[in-house]
View 1 (cartoon, one colour):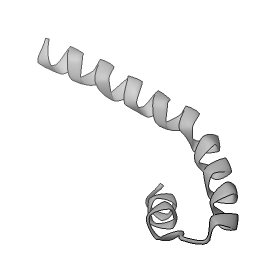
View 2: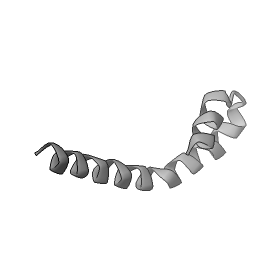
View 3: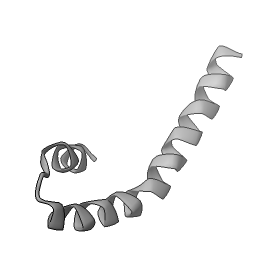
Amino acid sequence: MKDMRNTIAHEYIEDHLVDVFERVLEYSGSLMGIMKNTRKYMAELLG
């Protein structure tokens, strides 16, 4: 994920952006799941 963030932050060639954002979309589902699990954990932890 860190590598993906760095790629997004430093990619300036427009043609490459399409490839970058296709990869971002692939990770989006996983990220949403991680966020959901984190929020659930925090809610349980904090009551």
